[in-house]
Length: 185
Length: 185
DNA sequence: AATAGTGATGTCAGTTACTGACATTGGAGA
DNA sequence: TCTCCAATGTCAGTAACTGACATCACTATT
Image 1: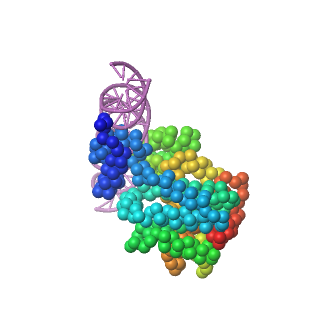
Image 2 (image 1 turned 90 degrees about the vertical axis):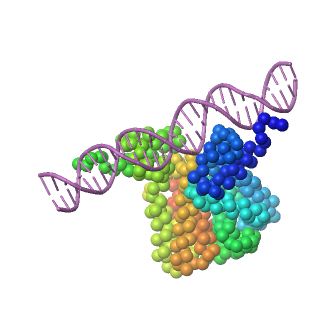
Image 3 (image 1 turned 120 degrees about the vertical axis):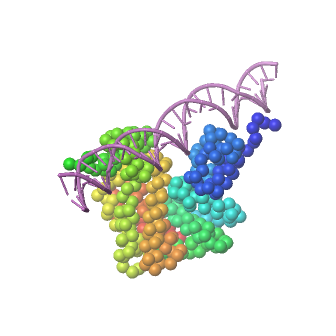
């Protein structure tokens, strides 16, 4: 038996999600989160860089979904590789819908959190662009394609979140088709 | 003669830009900014919501450039209307290049500022989408087109900033052409 | 001309996110 | 048995931001 209950980070994460949901992000103090997790404020900041970070923990995994899909895509136009990334992400999100929705509700209710999310998304765009450059796509096509992929993801995600159970995959397919219509104009 | 020197906001803005450039954003306290402007910290927060806001002041004007251009564009595909917005913004930025570069150097050196900038940019995308919907463009085309316009702006802006005096307008033209290549694939 | 606002500022006290320095202690290994 | 370590605690401090109230040149009203 160790000195402290194990799973401190997990407990903090859970406590924070609960409190953010119950009272709203800025009505919750870090001290309250720590208390519910039976820890101190100082320990909170040892596990998370700031009050918002826990909501964005899986960022590395998320980006890897896209990058891996792009890297292992068969030769072809940039947008085809990116499409594979989009479908991979959709498959990853679909079974976690309830959690994703809860999390998004919290984020959308607070500007600071939306800012942070956009930073993560721009990191995604940059990562996609880099993955395309690795495949020999020249600039500025790589950047443009990365950001275009992000546009599709962002719009599709918004639709998926507010839709009543439509499959993420089908929304992606639709968005990609609409993109071609838009860009051709 | 009034009780206080006029132009408090202007003085605060100038003092902040100077100090951010000299020492870096997080080495500067609001107290120091206020002192250089011959005001108090409290007054700073009456003019600006937070330490970063002054760097994003002209946001309304910036968005209006796009929205007005889109609203007054001749009938045609969404991307044509957005292109007009892009050229309008380019014309607005070009003569202010030195200031824009200085500002961008500050922003790029600090994560919090980049987050804020992305929020403003996403507001731009949303505004463009709304302007398109007002012209009868249906969803999800409007959102997609708005975000695609943002992609072009963002990539072009990055190129313009790091280029050695290339005209913003010509960069936009190139990006739009590349976009068609990318999206057609 | 006296009076009564008003608006931009100052003053002050408080909350909270976040940080650095140092103390504590159960358990793992020498 | 001894020593070290990793995860936590304790404490003191900085700085962003907020609310409540005071000040006083200027302006409008009577």
